[in-house]
Amino acid sequence: MNRLSKLEQVKNCSGEFVLAVNDTMNVLNGKWKLPIIGSLLYGKKRFKELEREIPKITPRMLSKELKDLEVNAIITRKVYDTIPVTVEYELTKSGNSLKTVLEVMVEWGLQHRKRVIGKK
Picture (cartoon, rainbow, N blue to C red):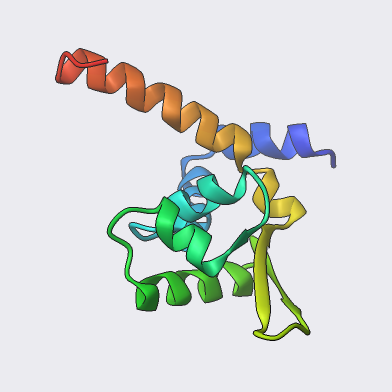
């Protein structure tokens, strides 16, 4: 069965649809995961770079979310044998596949803000 026919089956079955959405939300759930993924869409980042790019995230929370994303194979963590040790985070193929999802979310968010709040 190809991917498209499976997707059509899920769309036509509310139970499967809800299950698929729940699976997605279990991986992406939380305030910080999508901003982290969004930042990594622009390339590899070190911990401090991510911390600077994501306002109000604490080091502890960033560390926790990075571990969760790594466990779910959304990002990879590469440690370089330097002094001091250098660690870089990068999206996996699966993580990069979320680009389209994030682009649609950004577009929806911009339109929604304009409709509801009246701001651009």
